[in-house]
Length: 445
Image (cartoon, rainbow, N blue to C red; front, side, top):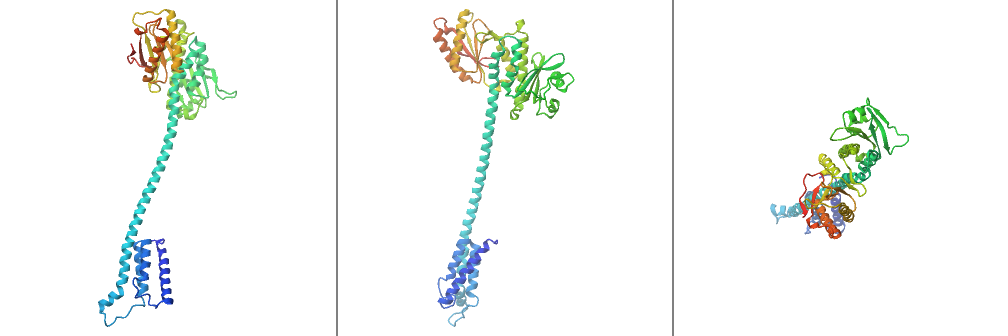
């Protein structure tokens, strides 16, 4: 028994003393020898039930000692030795046996209560752990939602800015590079450098203050020029070696390069962005952005030769099929399918059919109006392989099932508007994920 359990002795001694005082002043003073049941018995029961077997047994022995020490009765002639022993010890034996039995029940109850308390404490700890895990999961879920949202907005942002940069020549492409960069990467400060005679010279900046410490020119001897232009590397401040090369000039830097020809047009650099947004995926996105811009610059520079048309009809925002093919190849090459769901709805007339220019324009206007109703944003329109009749509608951030629903609505709207001019029963509509080689088969035929 520990010290805390020995406190019961004070209670036992107090109770025994009280009984003895009462006996001395109000009764015969023989310690209630002839009383059955004896008052000491109730003290033993009380301690046994309250504290347990060990305490009950101790109180029984203490009560026995209090009863018999200096108070043993003499043996009479009518009692033999066995009768005398029974007369003296039968009550203490009853006290001892009762204390062990009742105290044992109390000990069992206390032990079960301890076990339940341990289980309760364990459950509380588990609940606390689960609660913290749920909080962490919720924070991670929100972070992933933000991350995925940023990823899925990548193609849509490029589509929206493509309307601004694809209309004419190289000048507009150059003017919108930083707008594209800021939209896609959510950067606070960025710049791009044009490569001219082995010198990188700053062409334009976004978010720079008057006293920014960033260099506006890098020559061929600088480590930044060596790694970005000659070795065509993406430099990130998260890499200790790259951090030394960047030397405080930015957080990300990479070559504006055409992925097919490997021709470098300059350097794109992000001086500042939210640190939490700087991760493996954002670095990969930055790399694809550099290649995308390189593709646009290459396309714009060859536009005069007629090798690449961005728009088939600038007034109606109808993009050429060549541009659609380049976009699909780009997305397939860099495996953007895991970042978003983009679907294309292909509207085809019957074979060997021909649509006049007026009918083409009416169909295109009707498609524009219908798609603005069915899906208010995230839509681009392309001419098909047969530029005089086919049409392709590209929708970002949409599943094939939803694309099928929209295609049905599109055909219904076209039939309602133009059924008196065109026999749409001979048209077919198919759905293809952007970047895939084959369509999913005709939806309507």
